[in-house]
Length: 162
Image (cartoon, rainbow, N blue to C red; front, side):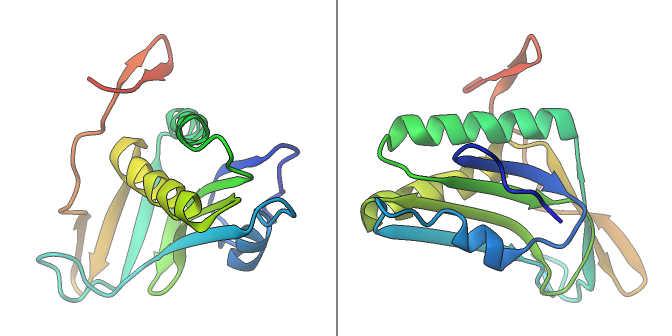
């Protein structure tokens, strides 16, 4: 089971199935009238690969967690009224329709919640050192949509920008 945090940011990597119900309900707070949840799931195709049967995610755990925490902090800086933030990614082998990533954000109003949630998933895709290997009948290979990570490492931390 993925334990809920003591604070208002739930940042994690886990090899276990993601508890979408818990991750969706946890951000709800009395002072927040909006909660936006994004759940990324494993689909049966990707660009140039029409018969994907599953994925394997690998991560540089220390770096990935540091960048997830930095994204949560930046999100809160951009949308200071944010209530709770969920940035949780699964690692290991996943089957079709498995949930691979959850971003959930609560805020007093929907505009801020939508904007913050979109920022969260976009930043995860662009900045966090997580890689996917796609499987298909007769083979496997690293995702064709890979791109260089944004940001640079300085003294073990992350500096946004390059």
